[in-house]
Image 1 (cartoon, rainbow, N blue to C red):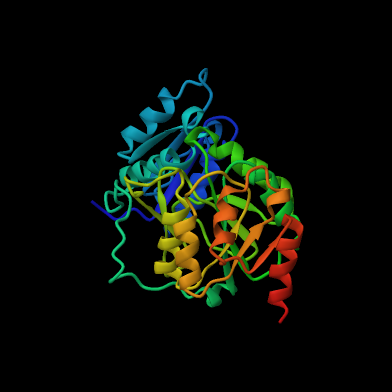
Image 2 (cartoon, rainbow, N blue to C red):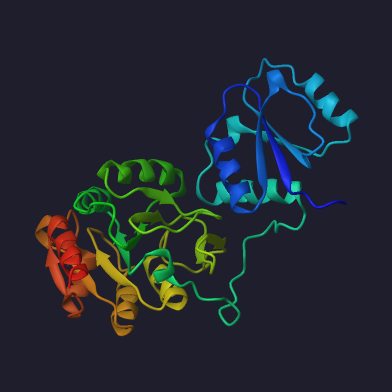
Length: 313
């Protein structure tokens, strides 16, 4: 079988969000992508495979499928009515399966991280000088929105949001956090490019891997984690991958985060906390303060100002 290098994305009806996302992911995996319309389709001998993006139930795709089949073309179907609504683990699983259908060289299962063999990502080559983990539980989203709104969006910082939530709320959480209008918040998915002045929302059902080329991959989560997603696990994981990380603890009720804060502190990272008075619940930050690990304590606006002032030193 010849190597698949150029892919035709056939849109049945209006291009859908999952089809646009798929096009970006294919390009990130070094495929050339050609966009086609089902109503104006003609065979192209330069294309190695076709993905038919379905959305219109009333559209008769049989003539299109017959034409592709008769030409011996490789066909993959994407039901966008389903894939448009996928988030987190399910979205990454859908992407892995589509890529595997296009070319079996792509793994069906998430990447297994091998710390001894993994090339370290050089953050400064991407324009990133600091990484801040934003940890929160109850009352956290509102505080994080106020915090992110204090930045300009051009700071050399990568934010990693670890917000306790259930899987069905992941898409809604990303939309809520983007209300800050300054720092774009994206769900951390396989193939996503890492950029300064942006925030990654950690998914519930997968852990993230920072690859040496500046893109994300995903791997299985710790089956014994204490929360979803787990602040302690993310802190330890990012210390192992990136070496230097910092932690901002926002409103939340849980013990998850204390071990993570201890690891960040022992690793030389800076920890700041949201004040108890401005928190809906302050049990996480209370424990961090009791252990004398918080370098600064204040409202979300003041926490952001603390970070910005340190950048200018």
